[in-house]
Image (tube, rainbow, N blue to C red; front, side, top):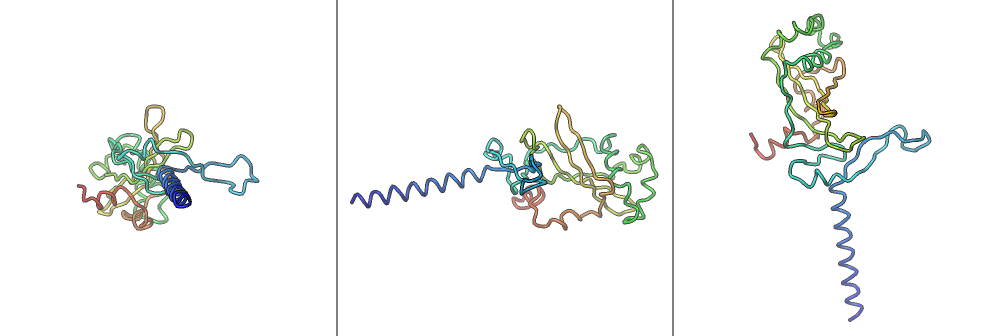
Length: 202
């Protein structure tokens, strides 16, 4: 009989331990950091794990993978015609003439001319959110900025980070693509659009 109780206790302990490990893994996230030594086997970039339960235990954040989450209450990009957005959108188009010769004329425009041409032709789509590697907070958002030129639709991926009580943007020069590229290139990525479609949210 004692042996029976011992087995029951052992089984319950194992189940509880396994459940705790799964619970911990559910709330773990990672960021890429540079190892201190070049001799590190993971050089030049390795995963740094941390407890993200402060965010993932709430319905606002949905874990996509080890690095990205969806913020169901993300802050939209405000004025798409602002100086900041126009500057970075134009940067995303500059240098793309070899792939899109029809956009070469846009590179020659100054920011004001570009803004006037793009008036009422811009829109944005939130994709996902990343944790900042120093603060380990979900403050880096990724969007697509859509533009229409000569009845053709294009997209530029843009990164937005919140720090110092304001938003900072970053765009890779010449990163413009035809609209639909991101979702075709990363079909397995669980973006905010897929979240809306899954739950039929309008």
